[in-house]
Image (cartoon, rainbow, N blue to C red; front, side, top):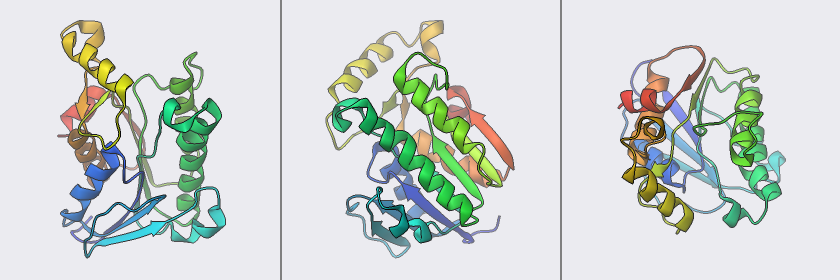
Length: 219
């Protein structure tokens, strides 16, 4: 793919990875346009940025906006922020799947999803099962390439205060030298965002899933 031919769509642009990804895309000469769809403004101003404030529960109002070459999906929430499993599932599964399907229907060619380490549709852990179900569902959509990243605990400067994640991050960092724990060692938001861009520019067609070490190696 030649320089300045790509138009990106980003959902989850105000989250940890999503906000970093938008920053990187805006200074990346391979992208001429960055289209962001979200519930609240990013606060970012740039000539390449197109921002749309949408209601995820009204797909008829945003389906036609899913236009471009690449959909980057970084949307997600926590149980405490969502208020219930059903509400978290709506954000982490339903919204992401509906937007991916709309993009595929509009002939968007490439799809990049930030999932999670341990994602599996038959996991006994709700979060891991939800992520695994989403992975299996989007693999059936008609994109030229699908790239699924499975990072571990994310490290970076969040705008919101996630006490549980901070405690987990500190614990994992303390024992990250243990072989079993090593595969769950923290990864920074910049590294995940860079890997998302890298896997698209490699231009490998088909479906690809990247474990933690593979994500680190794309930086």
